[in-house]
Amino acid sequence: MLRRTMCAVSAALVIGGLGVGGSAAAAVSGGVSAWGSGGYGELGDGSTAERLLAAPVPGLTDVVAIDSGRGHVIALKSDGTVVTWGYNGFGQLGDGTRTNRGTPARVAGVTGVVAIAAGSDHSLAVRSDGTVLAWGWNGSGELGDGSGATVQTLPVRVQGVTGARAVSANNRHSLAVTADGTVLAWGSNNGGQLGGKDTTEVRRVPAPVAGLSNVAAVAAGSEFSLARHIDGTVSAWGRNLNGQLGDGTTLTRSDPRPVSGLANVVDIAAGGNHGLAVLADGTAMAWGFNRYGQLGDGTTTDRNRPVRVRGLAGVTDVNGSLNHSIAATAQGYALAWGLNHHGQLGNGTFADSSTPVLVVGLSGVRAVSAGSALSAFSIALTTA
Image 1 (tube, rainbow, N blue to C red):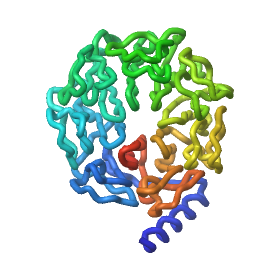
Image 2 (spheres, rainbow, N blue to C red):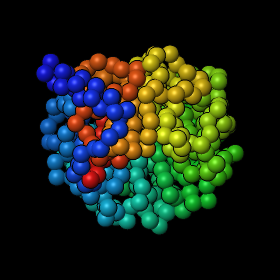
Image 3 (cartoon, one colour):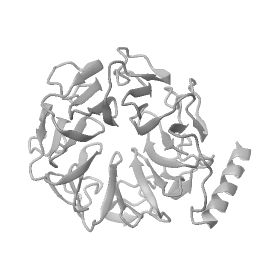
């Protein structure tokens, strides 16, 4: 353990001296690396061992997108097929069983996929015809199939969705954005995260979020939602006990309103109770719950307005879980911050960090995802 830790610190200091820049060594094209908790097979190496440093998921190539839930991973391949692995207690792997699986396997019958998302215990896939498939836990209607079934272990069609281009999911709700900039929401509305005022509602089929237009992307938090508009601004709605709506208050509301002071945003993400944004200049902002330093501002103080993540530049992708966050940079590196009790920060230690630390041994990183509450892990999509 000490040997790994010393290695991690040394590498971080060297790269930090370059401003997390310089030339990155080539990685396997279209591969996925994973680290952190492995108790449900979420690291994809066939074991249930914890791992403090990133290592490739064996045999997985030609991947173009990744996402992770609270214990499972979904990956989109270049041929439009989907593979999954990890925790499967609610059928979120889509293989017709509820048995955990420690290695990637294809979701049978799912083809022509262009976008994916992982909720806590369910999965979503957008097909090239603009329809959406879903599978896994459905206790709050988060699969959007209109049924009363609490679990679907095989993919079902989300009702009434056409023209979808992106999806997002988290604890018990799902979001989709369509080609005309409309946002659809379904599942639990206990925090107002669907946009409707009836917080006792369980919506089993999608419905538009009122007051939103010209949306380019969405991000689902635990009980709140974010939307990035074409003009680079961000709207938020839902539960706000930790300031995760970023409006300068801690007042929960179901009507979308702007996140204070954000402009020129090119990417968004939602952790359990915090929000993240990448700006056009390559810096990153964060707001909301910060008990473990997951906002990356050097403190553990909740923020009800966006603050800058310290020490990050050239950011191209960002993602968050309940208690940690992770970013990819244009130079091909990954950095992580927040809680580290399972080594999910990837620097070879168990030490939490309220500022970004280098994920050791990774290069050619193009996308990242942070696993959530059941376990704590991270994954990265790498390319040559």
